[in-house]
Length: 159
Ligand SMILES: CC(C)(COP(=O)(O)OP(=O)(O)OC[C@H]1O[C@@H](n2cnc3c(N)ncnc32)[C@H](O)[C@@H]1OP(=O)(O)O)[C@@H](O)C(=O)NCCC(=O)NCCS
Image 1: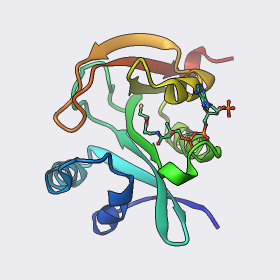
Image 2: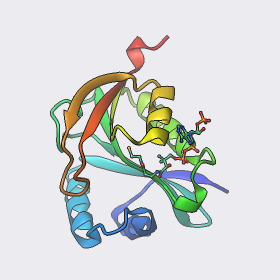
Image 3: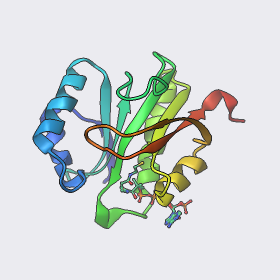
Image 4: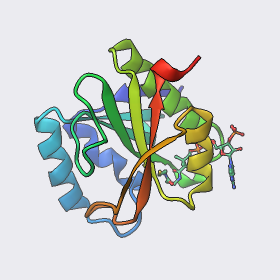
């Protein structure tokens, strides 16, 4: 059975099969662990047969653009990934729905997400979920150096 959960550092390496090819895993782990220790992020996964088949990271503190987060109001979602052989089966949408509702229950009302303009599937999902307001542009980070548009979902504006 599929299970949603927020992972701890000792489970982090189970995310490796989801990582983009060619990424420097050791460096990435060190960077994420520092941010986990500072309570700057949470990593949510969808677990099936004790494997992680989808992931989504929630950032509570800015890591690239100042518009990403507002303390206790706005969070930034990133590293949205589903195992290649399991994509286009609705799993990504299940995970993002779970995470948004989890955060909403904790009082967050604004969610940002960055996406490259040519990522049609991701953009389809984000628009469907209401990430329709373009609020910023970034050039990417060391771990994902591609330019992107930052979109906002504001639950206070949804009817
Ligand atoms: C983006 C990603 C996480 C989505 O997860 P997923 O489980 O494959 O997505 P889902 O199956 O939940 O939803 C796919 C949606 O895209 C739609 N879709 C499929 N192909 C499409 C295309 N070529 N153009 C537009 N929409 C498309 C599907 O119809 C479905 O929408 P619907 O439910 O409204 O019909 C996953 O594809 C992935 O890991 N991609 C690689 C990493 C990535 O690009 N991450 C996003 C970074 S911003």
